[in-house]
Image 1 (cartoon, rainbow, N blue to C red):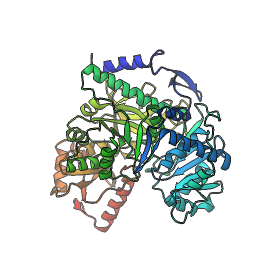
Image 2 (image 1 turned 45 degrees about the vertical axis):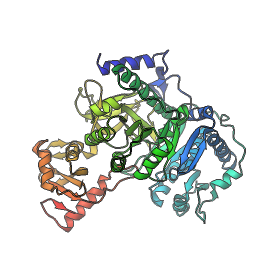
Image 3 (image 1 turned 180 degrees about the horizontal axis):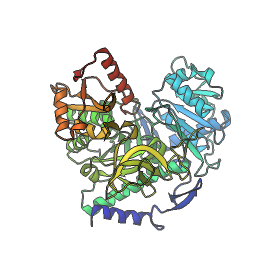
Image 4 (image 1 turned 30 degrees about the vertical axis):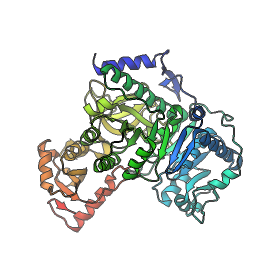
Length: 577
């Protein structure tokens, strides 16, 4: 029996009515969806399961560690402060704007446990961007660290609905209305976290999109959405474990205390699910003040970390650099997965070679609007199919459609329409064509699905370059450029052309000491792809690419940089900068 057939059979057994993850149908907002029928009703119910772990470590930040009992006591106290002191009621919005501090986790947990809606804000935003989001969602309270508290207060005159700024880890001169410590000192009694009724389809979060192609939009997701994301991950892990067992793959001994290093910002959908699901497995979460590959290595060794989940490719690459440079063995590390941005096959191969294939890999595909991945790929397939993002979860529905909204044939490229209980269902305060009446989210991503059900992300629709009527998928050219041994990273994009409509250009960051020229790289692409896919011009640079908070390359800013260069020194030839 082929692996894919084994997987289908295993999923069917796990999700039948008497299985551990039964799947049925539920009518939600007028649409019939496949749902996990035995799922907890709310994020709060998941978090309360943390009581089971008692004095086991729950959360570590740098040199601070608290147990599950301590963390839940803090959640209960801050929940009381929200309800009794801040007068927060179900449906009210409470924003969090801070680094990955432990208080972030407590504030989020308390907010969703009292039926309020948590709004994680991008920690890299300017004062104006923070104020725009706070005004858009109508937040009553914001929990912010010192830097973001000052930014928000500078725009307070634009925020009439904002009643309180609670400052975390304040500077010597706090800018917030109150400090976190002061609020907790005034509320030493724990609030009954089960006191307020919460239904599965009550709103839980508003998560803003990255805004790389326009103004950020607030995707509204329910408790059911986030709980479904958690169970999707559990089903995936069980399936992969059983398939590996059937293959006869080596089985590693489970960690006595599962420990996960969170390398991305908690406000991002690639990291937040780790916080929610930790209580169900007793996972010890390790946070960092900011991403630093050398520090990550130290924390993995010190805390016996076994999982590094959801790192964007730049994070994984920097981490592998440090591992190779130091020769660290990392005996406790079992899994390192990618998410948040496309990963190149060269980097997948490197993950395998650096750890001699004793560390499992994996990746997933989802968006802010889906509250986490909609498909995921396990370790064996990750290395065998490095360009795939995996197969759909049991509750995930995917359509691949053409420009008219008609389904394409297997293997053909089209836009991914996604549907499932883990998807957000609207943008806050606006109607948008991305969410249709039948529950489908129109992703704007071009994908194809092969005959075995594996999904491949081809490109963003907006990033497709049309040269003289021919479609060029930038990710395809980036994959080839990235396979060159002297290319550290690259970005491919289109530029207007009077005759062709658009032409392809590439920006390449070469490895230190490289003598590769732009024409060398153009010849490399020509050896693998049709002539019309060869970049007309290659810009070589030594500086890092502009990125957003989670490490995605900002192609909009790269276009602006190239336009400035062309204005200053127009030339038809490739140039170095």
